Amino acid sequence: MKKILALVLAAVLCLALYMTVSAEGSVYYLNFKPEQDAQWQELAKLYTEQTGIPVTVVTAASGQYETTLMSEIEKSDAPTLFQVNGPVGLANWTDYCYDLKDTEIYKHLTSDAFALTEEGGAVKGIAYVIETYSIIANTKLLEKAGYKAEEITTFAKLKEVADDIQARKDELGVDGAFTSAGMDGSSDWRFKTHLANMPIYYEYQADGIGATDAIKGDYLDNFKAIWDLYITDSTCDPSLLASKTGNDAVAEFVGEKAVFYQNGTWAWNDVASLGEENITMLPIYIGVDGEENQGLCTGTENFWCVNGNAAQDDIDATLAFMEWVITSDEGRKSMSQDMGFVTPFDTFTGEYESTNPLVKIDAAYTASGKTPVTWNFATIPSEEWKNALGSAMTAYAAGTGDWDAVVSAFVDGWATEYKLSH
Image (cartoon, rainbow, N blue to C red):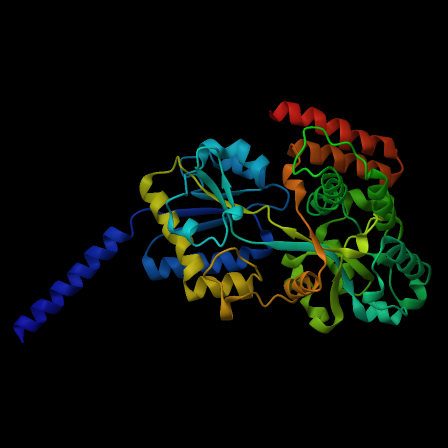
């Protein structure tokens, strides 16, 4: 019996020693997505309970990620895991990024297309979610107005329907066809970045390119047409958009005071209360020839980077946490079902495929032969370009600026910012 007890005690001591050794290092994740903060906090807590490794998740305020990262990265307890929004975003942070080429998480990518790889082969970032945005529509309200979503296949039809709903808003019990196109920092990215992608995409398609040092603005008349529709067939006066927030738009849509709401698959939890049967997504039509064959806007600007300037123990702990997130049952369930993500990792199969209804709608468009709109806004030369464009769009909507200023911000601003960043 004494021998057995001695063996048990030795095993316990070995296990305690193992846990002490294996629990070296810590993780600090600076999260980009406020809408998934609760899920990341829960995963961090669970991982720490299982491993003893401290995991801290800090979520930057909407529209403040880059500013927050700049502030946090120089601290002694800097983030060990952060994100960049693509090749342009990586340019600012590449010196901080650990080479992920030989890591387990890189081996689980379904395609090298989901990695930010520099000349020489160093992998500086790995995409962790593939997302889709477009115009979310309330089919119940559409049908109340006498329309079906499948009838809307061009900008002309979208405008016809939106104009009619706006004209009959009192009869239909809504405040407008579209939710407020808020240009507050919590919402302006939907337009100065996501909507701005449309003229960039079509120019790139026409010219057969994937990036440029000087955008020509060939589709800015189309950009004006869709922006005019958003701000006139709306729940509020265009002069109020500077202070309208993302929460305002959600409340208007969920409260059934608007029929259309531009946002993405990440917003499902915000609108789910309306019921899956009452929600669909429409392409963002802007009046381009052949747009009836257009699908939704699908891509990513979410790339994980590991802080190469962190202590090696913290780097190792961070890599282990990332691997756990994409391989464990808890991590895969959280990302696919609770966060509603479509991920680019080979571990998300079967029950861990996304159950997000908006993701399924996107898949149906693609399956029917529609061409997804790529996320070309990753090639926008700087954050300053977006801010200047957003300011010009806001002033135009308020009547204190003209459309020429928007064109100048788009075209001249692009050339200027590209030169500065290169």
